[in-house]
Length: 453
Image 1 (spheres, rainbow, N blue to C red):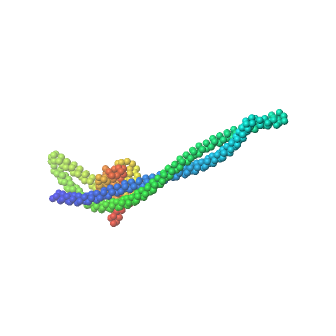
Image 2: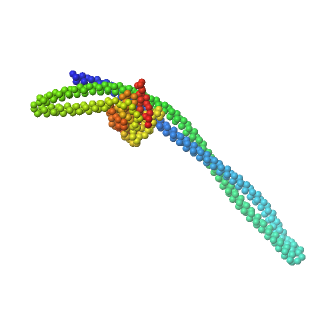
Image 3: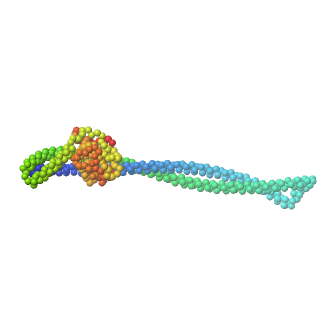
């Protein structure tokens, strides 16, 4: 009869816990979906921020390029003005040479006419005029002197003509060189104008690109704002679901305590029964007369002793797990040795702290002494471990995204004790997990605070 009652009680408890587990699974499924949405929004927000940074870099690059174009434009404009001045100067030099050539041509023509006239006159008169001119002198010495000076005058006229011809040739050469230089300057001026047009076109293109980048950047900033708002709302949804999990877990914890008390009473009853059996066996031992009976009694005693040891071990484990937790927790220990914070608490409304280790499968430890109240596993978030740090149920830490948990539900853990490893979530970085700190006030509604590191 007692066995039937115990079996019926176990069936009822199993049914109640099956229903509680189903409710927990439904809440955890909602939490998983909300976390997936939050991670998608976070990735989208990160992508948008990276896009904004890229657009800012492109805008700065385009502004720098525009500055270079303006510098080149100013330099080419100065070169064009310098070339125009050189062209004007060369034109003035050519005009001056033209004037000098006209004067030289006029003098050359005049002297040439004079020499030609004299030569024609001497030829026509058959040197009579020359002889007559010489015959007017009174003595031969005067004739020689007059002839000498006439020869000098003729040679001077011819020399002047030759000098004028050389001067004309030099002026003509200079004019040709100036004309060539002027043509080269005109070509250079045309090239500079062509380069100026190209640089102006490039400047217009850069200005158009900068306007387009500014428009795109404004659109990206609007998307960042919308995504941030959605991420904050998703964080609030996750917090609400987590509150429901805590409430359900509190109810399950009360049921666990009740079952623990029943188990304690059952063990005490069994110990009493074993004591009675032990006394009975002791009495039987006294009455035993044959060795076979004594051996049987010894075997039963050994079995009883082993069972007593097992019960003591169970009682010790139960006492350790059910021992009151400390009322003061103190500062929380960083849960990942050598790790770093990649997304701090409060950024973009985030209620948790994302922590990354140096590599995948990094060991995660308990941030303080406490009792494991829940270990949940799902295909997307990996293992989620919840630890209560006082019996009043006012302080909890939550570790999500773990794999290979090294603790079990209802187990007492110490500060710094290994509880699992990173890399349990296939949708997150294998060396990253999320760390939450929840404080439950008198109304029973928890709030989420910074871990303080």
